[in-house]
Amino acid sequence: MKKCLIHTEKPYEVVIGSGVSGKIGEYLTSLGLSGKVLVVSDTNVAPLYAEGVADELVYHGFEPSIFTFDAGEESKNLSTYGDILAFLAEDEFTRTDTVLALGGGVVGDMAGFAAATYMRGIHFINMPTSLLAAIDSSVGGKTAVDLPQGKNLVGAFYQPELVLFDTDFMKTLPYDEIRNGLGEGVKYAVLEGGEIFDILSDGLTSDNLEQFIYLSV
Image (cartoon, rainbow, N blue to C red):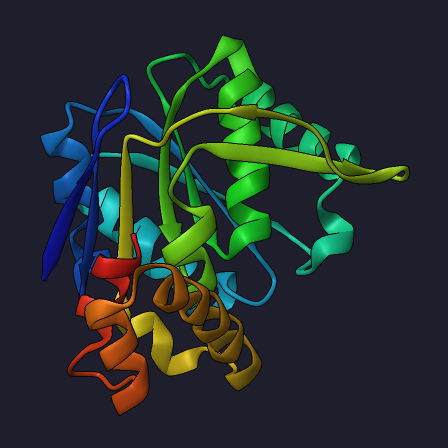
């Protein structure tokens, strides 16, 4: 397991490792969080991981709910965003409760923007499930939705309180998604060189995956 501290106005950790999703309840408790947690996911990821995450949260005394939307960029719109807000309001979430993104970049954008704007901001945790999201969109605080006129036209900068990437998620990741993440890694290798370049030259494996993500973040 590796940890990386992201230095923002309110610093937060990125935790990378095998099986770390099974400790989500412990991590949230260590942050002083409690109460309700809305797990936002999509139709690709939710059937694989959402119930397991929810069960772990229940075990640690949280009250999880799951909100699932159709996978794909076409769902990254004001309608889906409004549905998430409506769910939060109808379930009487307060500013002390939490939104948890479980998915790739689209899920992170949608859940993050909802967390940033519901009641002027509630707790936000990001659990990326794709390699690209782990090394790129899950860190930096960019959240947004698309308009018919263009992508990411409505959004906010809103940092998570924790980013948790379980490398076991890679076992169910389609090849195209792995390739997208590696493409982003090549960009980092060109800019930074060094160990990232060496890892990509040797080939990404289960043995060097944590280090690759750590260096990319």
